[in-house]
Length: 392
Image (cartoon, rainbow, N blue to C red; front, side, top):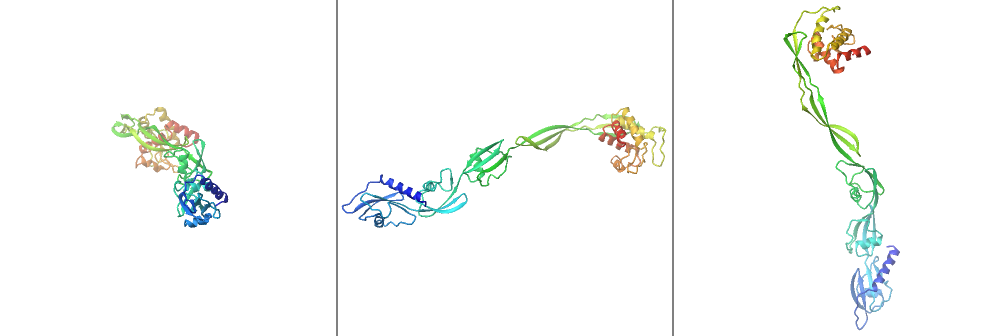
């Protein structure tokens, strides 16, 4: 017990004597008001000093008890003697433990004696009365916490044990997806800086065309190279929903949340004549086994080009392109591994158009036109690329 605290209590006790309760007197001796921890009783005694009064009342005083006036002070009839019992507190202040003795009747009075104001968080109710047994008491002092959120700094003097209480004292609420730089269940540290990112998810819906495919079916009753559209194609519609992730108002991520076709594409169906006509001659007939004259190959190609809706200018570009690449020979081979009329690299790619890809002009041309459409869009675009780079 600090000396200034003890002398302050003496002053408090002596001041209280002026407002004492009425005492009664007997013919001999004197009557003394004895106040022990706020409880008052009268003692009739002939003792001359405080020590004698306490002995007459069978009151033992411990080393941590406070007596006012002191034991050597003389007493007269109607005087008052105050005894404040010492109470042991097992204190834990901000995690550090120590034992201290106080002369107080309640937790609140003890805290005031020790200099802990009401801004401190206490583990026991302040109104709890202190008794002869030791009292365990945890005290948490206020700590300055700074929250960086919504483009500003929010400072709060927190008296709670965790960040959850500090957030509540700062009147800040976390949305379900918000991110915080420290766990809300973690202990508060003085001068701690905590960052909160506001995370919001939004959704964006995009519609995309689904190109229709073309189905070609052979018609043995039509002349080779002639075509007829049996069913016009129609593009479908795909709806893609993206989930957008925004952090503090800025887009930081996007992913596909849903992807579905809401209108199916309708295939274009074309009849292709297969009835053979007399083969046309060519000014540059290829030689070698397995070859097909360029005239008949070009006839097949002419029908397929028309079936795709390409005009004569596109066919002319195709003739120029494959004249350069293979001379329209089905067995044209390049040391690089390119093969056939379209010079597929490797030639086995054309197996996707038919098992007879090594010898069939129709299979090779079908694959070659599909490749040109997928990579360049049209034969003229492929021919322009070949002229500029010497390959396509």
